[in-house]
Length: 133
Image (cartoon, rainbow, N blue to C red):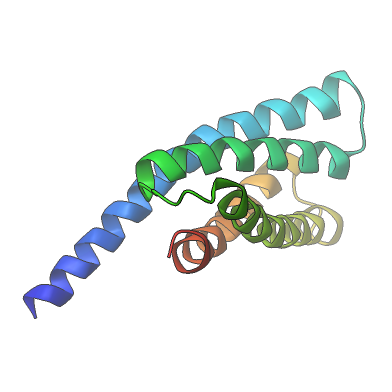
């Protein structure tokens, strides 16, 4: 019973750390998305992709060092696994964004918050079970 509680505590702690890293990624994501959409007048989906990929890269570095404390020497392979999980997250993110903005006519940035929330759950468990297993 104590072991189960310890495992749950570790999982919650890692998820919280993942959330802190994700929040830093949120700043990168929103900053670059708005820069490309509002300043450079790029397509909203292209802008979303640029923001998401840059945030995923910064998140990989921080999650590797802090959240999961990976010592895997195959950094390139690990990064590719992280990006694969992130690309699936991007598909989830963009699908939710599309449904919220084009089908439900919600505000783009409010929709983006919803999309990020849904993709975060996938990203955490995907990376815990695949990338940093």
